[in-house]
Amino acid sequence: MANLKLSFSDCYNEVGRYLGIASLTDADDITKCKDIVYRGYRQFLFSIDTSTGGVHRWKFLEKTTTMSVEADVDTYKLPVGFSSFILTFTCTTPIAINPIQKSLSFIYGQKSQSSGTGYPNYFALKSGDYDEINGQQYEVVFYPTPSSAITYYYTYIITPPKPVNDNDVFVGDDLCSEAIMESCLAVAELRKADKQGVHYTEAERLIQALIGKDKSDSAVMNLGQMTNGKQIGYFFHPKVLDQNGTQIYPV
Image (cartoon, rainbow, N blue to C red; front, top):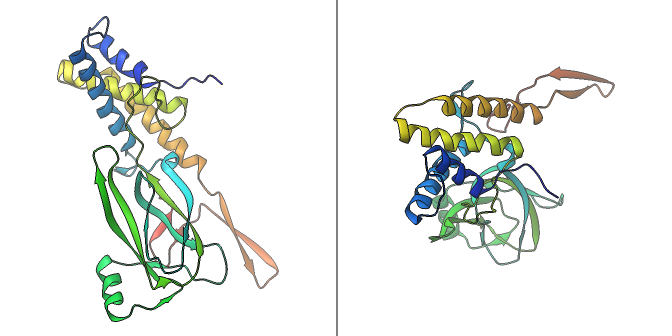
């Protein structure tokens, strides 16, 4: 089904038109316009939320998946495009416990003292292979080494692949495509005039509106609490803390 998303070629051709290149046929011109799109895309992915001053974490970059571990295997590759954890490993059965993240040196220190097996109590993130196409890959190491098969689910932030083909589309919805286009034109504008102008202003307007929508779409309006097994109290716009007391909602 057709949609209103802008493609990679839509963006780099529009950049070419803004720069005064009527028809993109020269290889050097095409490369220059594509590089501008890549920079505009990166700036969108790591947009600054002006209300907090920090980088906004887009909900469409969050992915929940599962990992099946096997008996006597302690190291597993994470998916291509893994960036960082949001929610770490949670077991799908009530038998096993949920492992706690530790440093790699802690895990190897434990292994040097005991090579036992059982339900993993801990895990650590480990750098894996690197290649020119996918970049840096990551793995996890569990301790103790699993003694039986376990399935975990977890949520992580993805690193979107670089658009290469003309028909490749960007992450997010149609409105995101428009914001990405304006971000690309803002980069072209800066290179052409050496100053920020109307495209920068429009990109900022769209991005901040999308950040507000992204927050609103994922907001929990209230939480219920059972009191003495009889009453339920509601708390509007609650704050949720993890086991260390760090606020994880709202982010």
